[in-house]
Length: 315
Image 1: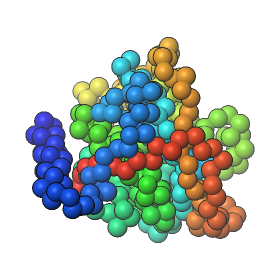
Image 2: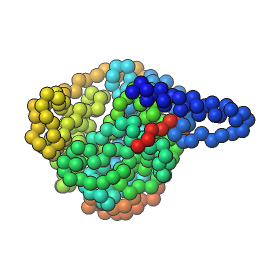
Image 3: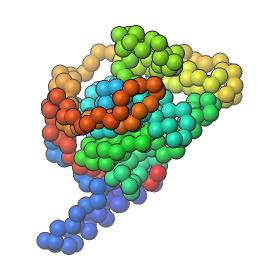
Image 4: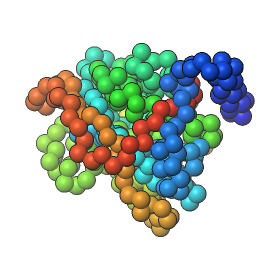
C-alpha cells in the first residue's frame, strides 16, 4: 500500500512539474488529475473533516440522490454532501441479469483498482457487480458503475462536474490509506413509511435485509458489517475466519455486531449540503410504469462547491 501511495504521489508531482515547465502556456490538466476546488476544501474544513479520511457512499434510487459521508476523528461518518443523480435506468429493484438495464441494489465495496480515470463516461468507478451475493443468486451483468455523462444503461450517471468531485474525494481517501469504499445502494430511503408503500413488491423481503444495513448506519454512523452465506446477506454480522464461509453454503458461526450509539462531534451543525444539478430517469423496469423523465433542477441549491478532481486508478 505504501508503494502504491508513493507512485500516486509521484504522478501528482510529475504533473505539477509539467505545468511549471511550460511557463506561460496553459496546459489543461486531465479530469482525474484536477485538484479539488477551494469551496470543497473549505466545506471539508467547516465540517471538521480531513480530505484524506475514509469515505462512505449511499445511493437512493427513488430520490435520485447520492450521499457522500466522511469519517471524523471519533471513527464515525458525518454527512459531507448530497449529489443529485443525473440519470439511472430501469426501475426499483435489484439487477438480475445482463441486459435488463437495472441499476444494482445491495452492499458493495470499491477498491482503488476499480477506479477508472479513462472511462468513456468521463470518470467512473465500478461497483463490483456481481458481488458474492449476486453470484450466489445467479445474477449477471458487467461494468455496473457510477460515472459521468448523465447517460445510463444500468449504471448511476452523474454530471461530469459532480463525478469529478466525487472521484477526487475517493482518490484522496485511497491515498490516505482506505482500502475500499463502502457503497450501499438502496431503492429509496429505508424508512418504515417507504417500505410500507412497497409491501406488495416481490422485492419486499430483499429490501427488509437492506433496511437492516440502513438502520445500522443511522444508529451508529458506521457502515454495517455484511457477510454472504445461504445465498443471502447477513447484515450486522462478522465472520471470525476460523471456519469456511461460502456464499452458497450454510452459514458458519457468526459474530453479531451491535450498533453503538454515538454523540455527534461539533461542526455537524453546518447541516446537510446539497449540490445543485439535474435529476432524470431513463428506461422502464421492475414493473414500474412510465419511461424517460426529463431532467429537472434540484430544489435545493445550497452549495456551489462543484470543483473538479485529481488522480485516478485503473479499473
